Image (cartoon, rainbow, N blue to C red; front, side):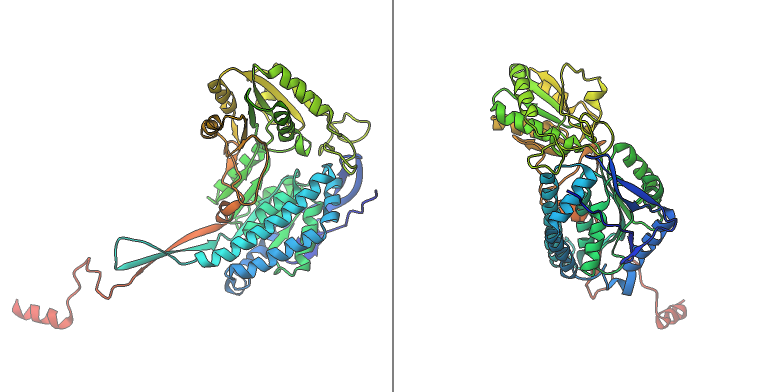
Length: 487
């Protein structure tokens, strides 16, 4: 199946714009190892233009064009984007397969997730109107107080390649719902659907400059965006190493950040569960999206009494995974994003299970970002918790057990931003997403995602007609003259 990749430019101030230096980057289909098109390569010059466009859009007409409009006004655009994404779902899903190597069944599901995210934040944008000026109970009757939730300003959004359009939606939708304007810089390894989102924004007539999309290399476009003095916040998803650089850049100007970084998440399997169900969730939690998920539960901690039988189950389930061209029916593991191959052609890696690892091994401690599962056994609940928490990361963790009291104990004991019980990896727009430790700062999704793009302004009003009375008032001229005569 020949899939035509649209040729796009940078999207700045509501228009397609050629990069200042006219540079472009080839698009490589990971499943075919073929160049199938190219994307524009922005540099610092283009970032400057994009930030300026976002700044103008934020303040245009005193904010009345976007920043200070009602949430209901902004919600109309979010719903229009969602509707158009669904109309183009099949096309967008195919483009993302070619760009990322992910199975078509996954990219189609991702497009549903994109539309759902925009619709969800349209609802929250509308609800935001009713929350403005909500009174705060204070103990002094001569005052009244309330809080305003205001958009932070111009936001830099830097997103990864494993879920190109979905991860962009997780940031764009709440940022726009809050009334911010934004510059999206997607990964140079997978930018095609993000550029199609630009076309969708153009079609729904979103005000110029509200969303700008600049593609390019991290060093040439991402770095100048993260360090730009007129960006008010940075939201980044990617590696911990790059996240540290982003945090350092933000610290120079004391600007807020949201970071969703790497992980090395555990899945703990106790000896009281159904082995087939446990096996399926274990391989799903590690091998979905070709193993390229920051929250992948890639450290299996299994009870020693079932370890041998469970490994047999895992191998049987893994052998049954169809590894193929991601466009083929039934494909459940496609190509990884960059070079490293097992099949005759394409960037493919077979599911890999590694046993007999020690906790000091790099494979146990560092993120692989591929379909690789490491295995250790445990004998006691305490030992399982210790193994699970012995990591620099804290994005996710999973527990497989029929003992719900045990599950409750582990939910509290595990040091992770998300804990899954008898499952791994489900994620919903309404729930919080983010990590602890070196897995990041802040939360996305749910109301927490919207709040991360809002600034809180406290307003207090003195409502008494009586003077405050802290100081003695100055004497009037008559009182002063009388006082002088008496002296």
